[in-house]
Image (cartoon, rainbow, N blue to C red; front, side):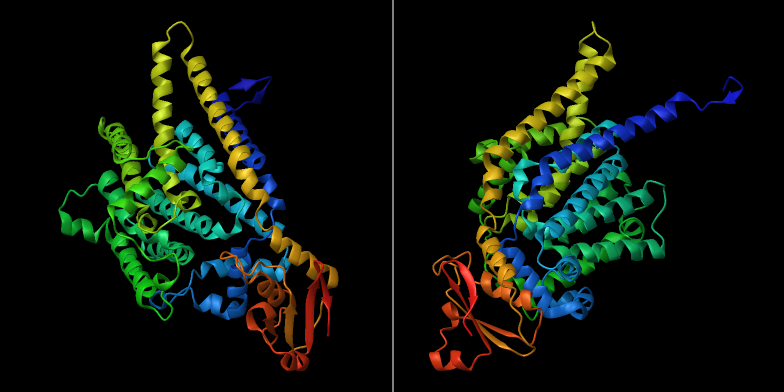
Length: 484
């Protein structure tokens, strides 16, 4: 088309690009509005414990631990997050929070891509991304750095699924190098958190729903299911390490599975409440009624995206379903399935309403319905954040921040190989959730693995032993001072 002698591109592509750009800016603004205040949240006890754990092992361990799955190394991908940030920014929690914010935004984009690959449609995919930008039911995910494992697992799991589905939707199998790339992403997901163990089953379901075999089961295993079988082998090695490795995770406190109907009921009650923004579904009748509704919506018509998400919701929580107190931020990966499922249903409902209301333009009704839904979702998240999440944020890391501020004020320095004691540290002795904050901060502050730190509260060194130490520090009236 020509205008004034100059070529002009058609309006539709440019309009679509502008619309996509505006939608992306809206999602980023929505995310920042709900998440920017996490930048001021101090380190928690888990943050300091994790950072100290990886720092003691060092960069060489970080590189090695990614590969021997059968040894059950504790979430070595966490070291890839913590150690470079510690080397660059030290004990500045803002840098860690900013990095997680970038990962969370990337995860929203990956979910958008995955929803489109599943056939959810542009609008539904965008709404699904909006849901995972901020979800108050998973509130701790958006301010508590200790849940970086869930963020990393989501990033690599969805990245692997997007990579896999983008190849399969082009009507071909993965090549050798593509298979290696997928397995590399899956390895990173397994090394981030155990919730990635369900990915092989998710691949098999995806293959069955979207690329159902026509030449028999054996041919299918050699073709579309081949990559899923490879990843299942990696999962077996990882599970072996978690169960029988040198330091098996299953022996750690809080990781003893409880296989009982009561545990399933408690998990489903809490999980449905969190995913559906604090609604209550206690009791088997309400739980089964909700799953019956989800099943009806998934199977009432031939909608592959809904059926896939139904299976996704059923399978992905299994690694945490039989562990006590594993809801909230632990549901980040299941949230992906719920977000896509809910977005597709909502867009279907809006489209149906647009056909019913005949007095107004269909596009106007659709836009008003979608806008109202987005406003309701944002208002609900805002209410829950102000009511529950913000008070929890305010109480996170206060003690750790006070101790760290005292170290910054005194700025203690010790020589290589020194033995150091700290007296009267402000941690409550009977607090079951704390106890080693001062120890972790001291080790990380000195940044020298040859320095030995003692907490007098825990080690009870006699006076003659204290006299032989190189440095002794004490908290006096809340201030850290050098005694020797």
